[in-house]
Length: 140
Image (tube, rainbow, N blue to C red):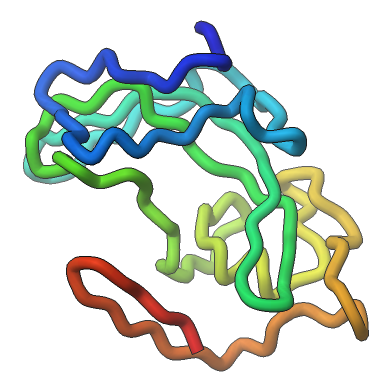
């Protein structure tokens, strides 16, 4: 795998907007494990890739978070999707929810300890609302 290049080898997926995350362009990205992501949904959509970690910023909150880097998708349902942000909250140690990471100092199962919250060094409160349309989204 060449982390310097965006992944475009998806059989049924097409990103006509051309927006891809290039891990090598990030000074804070780290590879966690290759070939570790393989998810199949009820409609048989399959996503495959690897685990990575990078800094995520939301307002005044900045944390290191883990993410699945998708290299293969067999469904056109994801056309022009340039990322999936895990807002879902699962009370499981490996939940990929960014909001869970933003509201905790530590994610021990991911080896993320003492997150670098700015200012008062406190995590984001567990109160938020999310609104979006086709082009924009806002988290309050």
